[in-house]
Image 1 (spheres, rainbow, N blue to C red):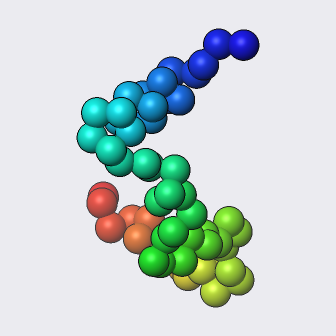
Image 2: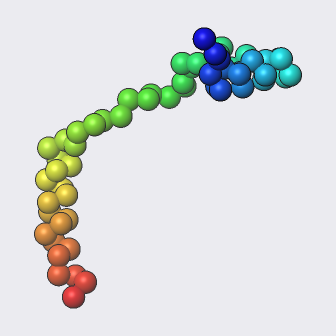
Length: 58
């Protein structure tokens, strides 16, 4: 099978600069967790702002 473009770039970088980027995989210093759904509080605040600001533009 042929090599992918990404693998070719990794090999070239390793050959030219001596950097192995595969060693840095999965080393995040911060939390990568993202909340997918809004909390009940967020939903309620959105509804308050939505109806409160309805006639401000007019």
